[in-house]
Amino acid sequence: MDITGAAWFAKSRKSIHVLSRWFERVGLVAIAAMGLATLIDVIGSKMLLRPLPGSTEITGVFQVVAIAGGLAFSKIDGRHIQVDFLILWLPKRGQAALDVFSSLLGLGFFVIVGWMTYEYGLSLLSSGTETLLIRIPLAPFAFWIALSCIPMCCVIIMELFSSIDRMLR
Image (cartoon, rainbow, N blue to C red):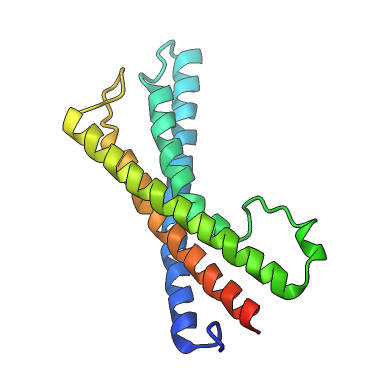
């Protein structure tokens, strides 16, 4: 059984990479906006004696966008923490079985995170929760985290298929 060699698998993987790259680019724009807000705040407070109102709030909400947006692509790039030194002693089939198990755990985790942050976003929306100083609504950022879990789950599913394929060989 060759799952990873199938045309649908390659097409799905490519689509997930494109989607993940889009989310990462949104995160990169948020990082640039954080830098710009910090620059405006520092120049305004040091030179003009007028800091940017709510600069820490702006930076905080952009951090949420940046971190959540980069999740899936950093998983694709292999930038997530992975501890291999004990796993390398196992036979290839054992390594693949452990990868299946960890992929299932990761998938379960991100499904729950996405679902719970969506629920949290609904509660923030219904209560109208905002930041304290400049009143940025917080619900869209919870929804962004939930939305960012979708490409992450897709990446983990692709890894799960690859691990199952390696385990069955």
